[in-house]
Image (tube, rainbow, N blue to C red; front, side, top):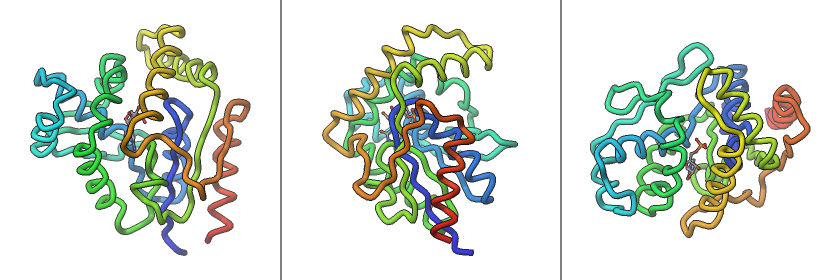
Length: 222
Ligand code: C5P
């Protein structure tokens, strides 16, 4: 069977990673969470007290940072220079700053190169904001997930509580709306549905429902 490249884009907390992980596991494909790569760099820049508006300083950090995404029983570990940052990159401190780091052209250029390298052999499910438009413009399947801000904040809130993290629904709503705005309005590779992507509004769908729709698209292409 042909090894497909599957691009899943959409705004913050639209369920991309949950769905992408299930599909990747199902097909024994590699799952690449590109948001985790931007988050890992943001974490490291904060740790090194770098001005997040300073593109050259960010690039200097990125060039000496090895970011690894390692599958581990249904989860994905995120390592930066071998340090496990899987949990810390999900804290609101990183979430609130990652879009500043991700707006810089040179940062994106390097991240896109790394992502394309990871995906070069196909058999990959990649999620992010610019996968269908820039990273894998020739992906076999492109999906764009949408959901209302309220629904996305509610889901993230429940997920946080389940993991035992502190969580405030109103703060989450504000954070998600702010991140959507920054990601959609930035100059370079903004969050945008690729013209050939299939849009799925997940607001009133279950995870299984979304997975089913994507599997249907996969079956059509194989
Ligand atoms: O997917 P996640 O919400 O973890 O992504 C965190 C942030 O990383 C996004 O809000 C966006 O600023 C940035 N990002 C990006 N391009 C991607 C993936 C993520 O700009 N392909």
